[in-house]
Structures are given as C-alpha cells and as structure tokens.
Length: 338
Image (cartoon, rainbow, N blue to C red; front, top):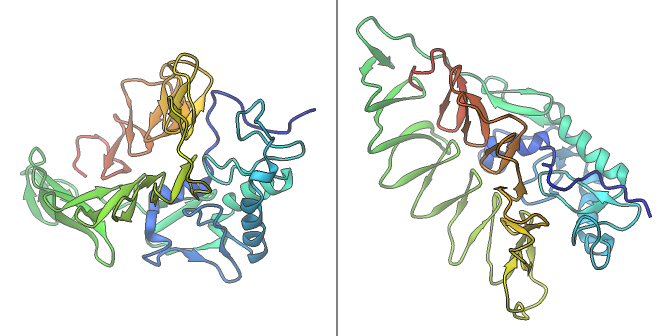
C-alpha cells in the first residue's frame, strides 16, 4: 500500500515555531507568567513541554491521539522503523520528535497552530517580539564605549576579565555569571552555587538543566529532552516521557532506546536507532558534518565554515553577531562585550 508519511531517512525534521519558543523561554510560559494563552485558548499539551495555544476541542483531540498512539502504529514496524503508521495515518510532528500517528488533517492543523502563535499567545511586546510564530527578546541597547575604555552602567571595566550583565552590572568572568532569575530578571550570580541553563540561572543544589529548561532535582530523576522523569517508573521515547507498562527485564545485548541495537549496521543517537553504521549524531538525528551544522541537537542546512558557530541551539555569524548567555545579538565589531 502507499504510505502517507512525509518523513525521510537521514534528514532532519522541520523544527516547528513553538519548539524554538520553548527553547528560548523555557519555564516562562508555565512558571513566570509572562506568556499565556489569549482568551478562549488553552495549551495544546501534545507533550509535557508543548505550550502551543489552541481551542479546547483541539487539546481534547490531541490527548485522544496520544491515547491511541500504539493502536495506530503498524504492527511489527515498517519502512520507517517501529513507529511506522498504519495506512491512512501520518506522524503528527507537532514538535521535533513527535511520531504520534494521526490523520493528515490533524498534522496540518498542528503545523497551522504553531505558525499562529503570535495571534494566540499573550505576551509583553515591550520585552518580546514575534514574527511568523517565532518569539525572541527585544534587543537591549549596548552603551557606547567611552574614550578611555569600556563602560557598563556608567562603570569602566576590563572585557578581558570582566563582563557586563544586561548593560548594567559588571561581573568577574572567573567566579561569576550573568543569568535571569524568577521575579528578578537579569542578575549576577556566583558560579560556586549557580549555573546558566539557557538564559536562566539555576541553583545547582536543587535544580538541573534539561535541554535549556530548568527542572527540579529529585532522587533518581534524569532528563528526557526538556522534561524530567524517573527511570524506575517511566521511560523516555523520542523525547516524550511515558509510564512503563511492564517490569520484565530487558533482553541481554546492546540496546538503543530500549530496542535491540547492532553497532555494525546501525547508529544509536540518544535512544533513536538509524539504519546507517558509524553515523554522526546531532541529538536524536543523523547529520552530515560536511554540509550541515549541529547546534545543541538541532540541525541546520548551513555548511560549516570559519565564520559559523553555535550560540546554544542557534547558529550565528561570528564576524557579525555575538553570543551573549545563549542569545544571539547583533554586535559589530563582534569584539564588543555582551
């Protein structure tokens, strides 16, 4: 029969606009309250980190699709591996790694919902801007250097050993860092106690960083994409946390994502098997380092060059822009401090 999947082996899946939003804003939508749905809309919740705003009927439909996921897969797998869909169904692709089988119409709706985030999401335009469903912070003006040197908030500093936090506070690069904290905005933190998770400052004693999203630490908790889970009771499948349905010990031999794995004929990328031996991984995907750039598990069709680099999960031109705490900012010349 003819399969209606749009996926192809060895190629990256298109990154929906909301996934970029989650990477950039992390817990802002769920904890800090700066992002919320417009009146009449709710979060889609295709996964634990899916904050696309949709009508309530669509959230119910998505929950039903998740419930029927196993029934809509081809028994025994198929041309696209164990997640091959039955005839008439396709991968939903609401976010990177979403292989829940749905109708073609539902996949089209998921893509349309992601593109409409500027209209369905309530946000502060003074702090953020939105274009074609992609959110980014409003640029912060960088103070011009004085004739006698660099200034940060009116105070002279040495860019070789010091940094400028949010154009206001000087900090020591060796012992301090500049991140945001809930309710406090950008602030200088001690490296002995804090780390930057994306742009967010986390307390190393109680928090951990999952794909740029702060998560609370717990006994036995580990990361699954941007979520956390307990391996004793749950499993991580393609970045989605699921409750384990059996406690039967896994068969002996190499495993990849809980499935048998042959290193001679396959490559395992973060729990996802690919039928190519000795491939190069970028997150859960295979990529070609000669023609593609891998930034934090995201693949870009940009040929690696001396002027290309990664800023967190975003590529940027090192001759034109500057990476400041995981955010790309225009800074010419790029030697100017953050």
